[in-house]
Amino acid sequence: MSTTPLTREEIQVSMDRSPYIRFHRMRCESVDPATQTVVVRMPLRPELERGGGSGQWHGGAIAALIDTAGDYALALVLGGGVPTINFRTDFLRPGSGEALVATATIRRAGRTIGVVDVDVHDQESRLVAVGRGCYSTQLG
Image (tube, rainbow, N blue to C red; front, side, top):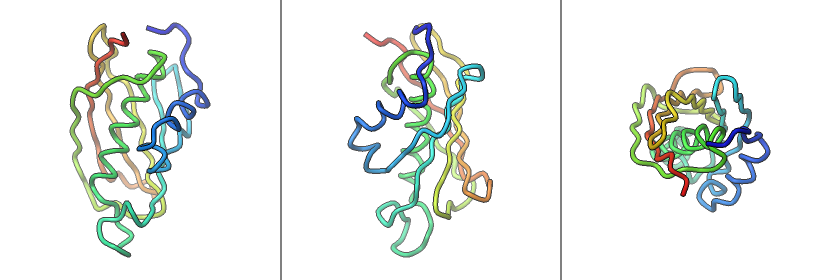
């Protein structure tokens, strides 16, 4: 594992290298190495709506946000992105509004597997979805 946590700027540079993450316009809002937490924001665009003009988020976009935030929470302490083994998303209410914010917190960063919990809130701080991801922590 990396001994020096990545900065918010380093994580954003890494995120920007991914065409998929760039398409979603995800931004790393903050990192906290002490709590092993990363916050990622994603703005709503017509391509991410559940139905045209509905203002509601498609579940796939929410799941992508959860997976990305979980991955970068581990990248914070490991020094780089890691492959997803699996993840789950529980949708708690329809997501709506101009943006969603995912807060990803590492639960375990073991030798081979990391586990991250992710909460997704809308702009009114309502909990929209929760997720848990498992990722391979073997970087080589």
